[in-house]
Image (cartoon, rainbow, N blue to C red):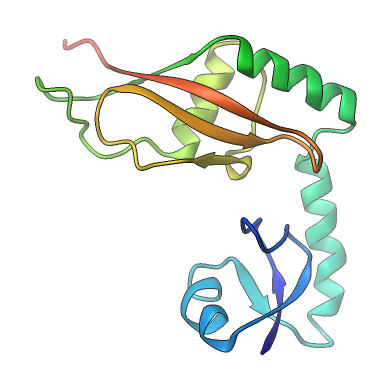
Length: 152
């Protein structure tokens, strides 16, 4: 077992700043190369506080605000406009940053792209669902409407 410090939220494992033990292969082959974690050391223990402080700065301050934002996100679909071909196939994929920008453009609030989790890879126009983790106790399903950008 490898003892690591998470630098990003990992579904089913923990949030940034958590110290967890995982199997060696999972740490060596997935978490460490992708930058989701760092190896635990006594010196690294000091970084935990700065990681948690950065996470707290990005997080929504209280539970009521998170629940209010969740209600806004659930109320209406968010339109994500992307470049697409004639058949509706996208030039690339929709990223979490694109979703965060679309939510802000729709006037629903500002989201951190790290709090958005796409349920599937979005490669064509249509309707999709994403999960947004707003608070430790609050998450919301966000309906996405992916449409092609107008051709110039």
